Image 1 (cartoon, helix red, strand yellow):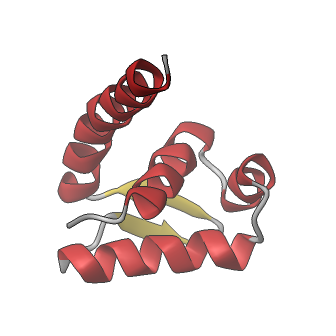
Image 2 (cartoon, rainbow, N blue to C red):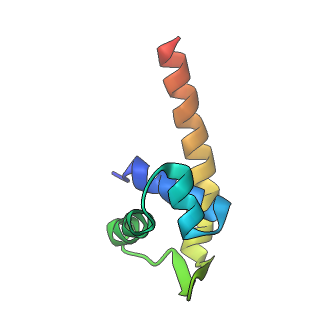
Image 3 (cartoon, rainbow, N blue to C red):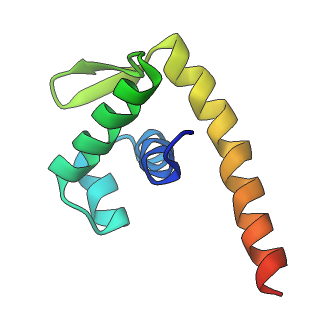
Amino acid sequence: MMNITWLRTFFTLVEVGHFTRTAERLHMTQSGVSQHIRKLESQLDVDLLIRQGKQFSLTDAGEELYREADDILQRLANLEQRIGD
């Protein structure tokens, strides 16, 4: 099963576009963000990012995961809200 925390970190990283700003937004360290991404890539056994110094772009798998992650995270948030109501 995919780790939802790692997925949220990945999704936020793609949205923000920067490791350090992602760390700030998620109240993590930059190395923590990097670790989440590496663990997610290891869990899925696929590279999600093409790292280019301090910048990155998405691989095809990263693009697909990003598209799906938006829906998954929205559904999870909706479920949490419905259960909480």
